[in-house]
Image (cartoon, rainbow over the protein chains, first blue to last red):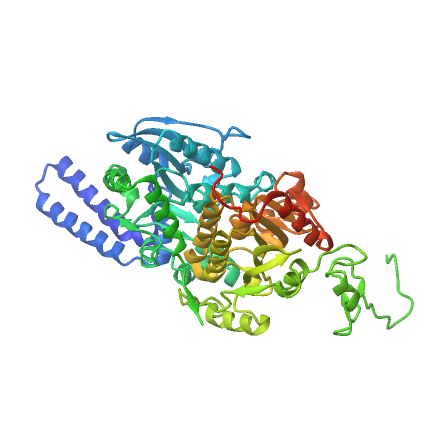
Length: 319
Length: 287
């Protein structure tokens, strides 16, 4: 797989390449330069920290869409044992843009739903670029109802550029499908943990995104429209996504400050796309901790708190 | 070779008919010039083609509620600019000019009133205020209206007219979808009756939350109702959209609205539905 590199990642990648070349040279020529290599590695680590610490909102938005970021099934594969995928909405079709299933998170049973992007061109098309049709939302709801019936907490991974704007989607009630999920998720009688792992685009994300807690990986975004979409509306130019990202304040840090996200989950230095295993491990620890905390509440307490959480959201003045 | 040549010189094409302000109004659908007084009497429905004009929230209140029965709540709630949003214009300036233009504080008017003497709580959106978009205040006012309906055990009616969520409040406006839906779930759990009325246009985040959650969903004839806007869909699929796509009649055919009711019959039908489903002192648990 060719590595995909953003401009701001280039200095790091170049240094890494140099280190790799030196290693090869040392091996082939059998010379002792490990001290030099160690020095360069330390430098690379420092560079990574520096670059990633001061990324702009536009750059973070790009990272969230990085084509090598771990997707829902990459994470599920690493943290869920005995995973069984469940397909179809029992009404019309199976939507590959949303995956759903059941499995074990450590010792505990869980239900999992999540948007699913594709890696290769063929898979991207198959997954419809993680843009769900109504069937996707209805499948997710079916699995959530199953979870409620058998008392399994729900784990929802958000990573979508938006619900699919197509003729069929409208004919089959995209709006109703999203609305129904918001309604049902707000009083589902099991804990729901929302984990934003990439892109959180608008109603397409929120359609499986109502829960007791919202945690976000560090390099992710979540807003009412994508910065590109916003720029296209404001300036008729989607390349101005940097300005739009700043105007709408779309990053994980912004959402934490707005009181919408509850916690930011640190990614490995250089981003989740550089180390799937480590990213999955960090997620597993944090998800387990949150689910354990949520299990402490009675069902009624849980629902009261959930409605209260959303009841408070927003800012207004009383003149 | 020229197929057709105008013989006279200096002929002017005057397709656009000039309409004097005040007395007359043109129907944007059939171009008929209508006498304003007649139009008012016909509840802003074109007598020639049946087009339902976009109307203001106070006009809608007069149409569905008994005379002088409306008592507004939370009219003091005002939008602030939580993100200090600046696009082409500053959001704070947009709010100011919308307030000035509409005489309203926000894109929804809420309160209590009566329909044929039956008590109701209403939330009526106003498209003239930044395209009826939903930001924090619209979400909050609707949430409070639902709470009033819960408290008074009265039926709830929401009239939607909106382009969707308000971009200038970023994720805050997105979360209003969850907030209003969560309160509707609470209302529904207490057996509250909610009638949703969809008017032209109802799209985006408003359709994908409270608008589509009515126990009964009514649409005005010919209203644009959908999730994605037609322009976005056209761009995505690169094809022309079918005739009548996303209109009320399309939504009825596909099973997403219960009934299309012309504005002139709306009040009577609303009272009928309320009488059939609701009774005084109701809204308890059925258990």
